[in-house]
Length: 316
Ligand code: HEM
Image 1 (cartoon, rainbow, N blue to C red):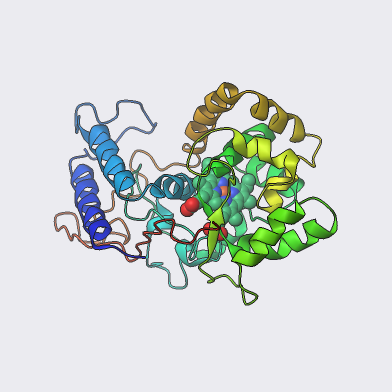
Image 2: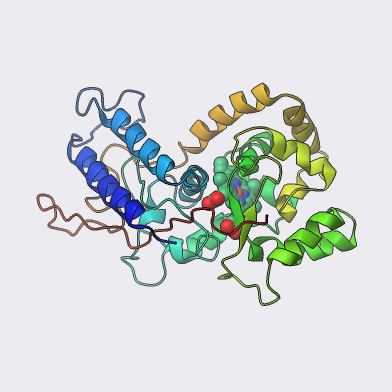
């Protein structure tokens, strides 16, 4: 559902981020640095924090959207904001049009980042993003390809302590789980009641991923898994695998441990294949690559997609 207030927040954010971008120096350094903007734009981080807080006040679901947006950007051509592009300069569909992102990814109104890439292909998203029907081995391999360990995969999956999921992401695979006893029958009955028989990629119905505390960043996600209350097959897989099951148990028992590891893993994920120095560009419009002669002109356009999913379809 789009709301006027959100659209104006979105517009404000685009202007804000574009302004921040413009204040940046022509980057010549080739490493990511803490304090990179200290001299060129000392308020950059405070401005971004303020913009995120405003978006969160308007729709708390944006927190989950942004965490996932970061993940889906970093796993496809690195953390280069390629997921924000609404047009593939080479022709064909973009990353954001790929089924793992469309229509479920949200938060396009709050971009931030490093130097931006100028390629965005649906096929890259399909190849690089893990899916909810992946086995534990598939998940481990997918994260290893991004230099993330099996433990870090389990740590980052803990993001599923907040946010929502569409019927198509869990309904059919969970019928297999019901048959082999790896999902609570009562839980599956609830999900069957939520999802129409005609469920497909574009069915809008969603449910909380963490049934117990869906808006709190806590370790309940891990506690639900041994109770057969993991929503996705991929979540459930974490307790069915000898490598990852001990991690789940450790994080279920110790929330502080999980939070410490979550911070480190998010930072590590944010360094995947980044563009630094003179690589890529600083986009003037977050959803479109710069025109060849656009070094001076600035167009303030809204990104093509806005999703103000105000957690509107609930299971209860
Ligand atoms: C381990 C592999 C992973 C798989 C298979 C997976 C799969 C999914 C799926 C299917 C959804 C629901 C999409 C929908 O239908 O709306 C989802 C949502 C979400 N995922 Fe993951 N995910 C994985 C890892 C991660 C990681 C690494 C992060 C971030 C660090 C993350 C953060 C989120 C968040 C926050 C949501 C909720 C988004 C919202 O409410 O808009 N996931 N994930």
